[in-house]
Image (cartoon, rainbow, N blue to C red):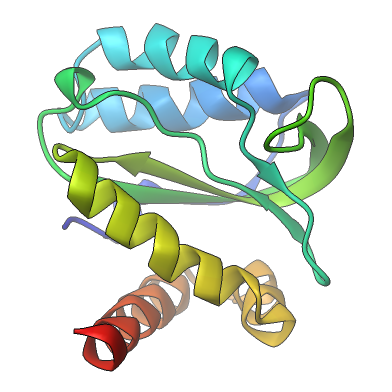
Length: 157
C-alpha cells in the first residue's frame, strides 16, 4: 500500500467536490498509480454513490472506484483549505462540508473493504481528524496515517 508525501495534498483550493476529486485523481494519474480512465470513473462513481461522511469533527469523504482503473494500491489524502460540500453517503442530495478527502486506489475488493473499515475507525476519532487537518507537514500526516492504519491491523488480525 503506497502512502507517500507526493499523495498528500495540503491546503488545496477547490470550488466543489468534483474539482477536489479531479485534482486528487489527476495527481494519482501523473504518478502512474492509476490509469487515465480512473479520473472520469471516480467522478462518475461519486455522482452515483456519494462518499461524504459527517463526523463529530471535520466531515470526510472517501471517493474510490473500481479496481480495473488502478495500477498500484495507494491512498491519497487532501486537506482542503476551505471545506466543500460532498453528498452524504447513502443520501440523494443532502450534503456535508468536507475538509479531509481520502481517495482510495485499490486493486482488490476485499482489501478495499478492510481499508474502509480501518478508515471508519479513524473517522470516529475527532481528535485524530483534527490533528490530521492541522498537521503542519505532509510527513506528519503520512506518519500519522501509517501508524493509524498499521495500529488498526494489529487489533483485528
